[in-house]
Amino acid sequence: MAAMERLMDRLGRTEPAPAAAAMAQTDPSNPPPPGHLWSGQGGYYICTMPAFLALPPRHLIAATVERDGLAWGGRGKVITGADCQVDGRANTIALLADGGHPAAEWVAKHEADGHSDFYLGSRLEMLMCNLYAPHRFEKEGWYLTSSQYSALSAWCQDFEYGYSGPNLKDYEFRAVPLRCIHL
Image (cartoon, rainbow, N blue to C red; front, side, top):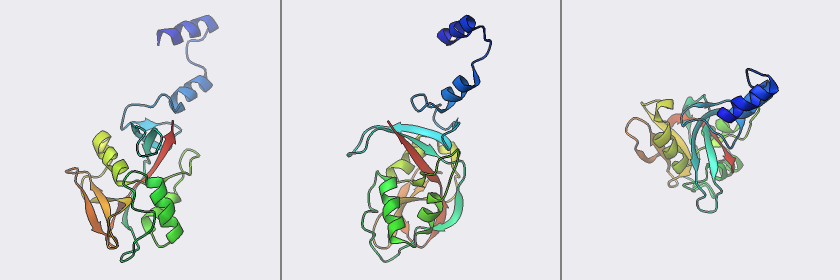
């Protein structure tokens, strides 16, 4: 911070220029603390996930909105490509291609701060939400993930006790849009 103050003194300013202030808030290399709103990025910063199983390192962001009463959909059917425990984006793409998956369809339509790349989080991504920013989520009830468990059920995340477990695909729970910034 001292370097910024010295630079402002040299330029004769008492406050950062608006563009510089905006860049500091939205700069992908400088996220806020977990659970805090990340201006310009569409929601709350959750954490930085390391490179894992062929996925690059990435910042995970949860939207500021959620919706209750959505089903995973597709009960009785195995959805090819929707069983990944770590890649919610890939799962959501598979669900959208299959059709009839209300939670995936709702999150995919979400837009915030000019971003429209939201998806239904995987089991691991929702677990990271629980580990890093549980205070941002409702304690009662379950949140859907995009990770399929079987033809009859999909993984869900609880934020009261931190439990992750399968529930029937036609049961209605909450969904929250997630997005990531690849590093």
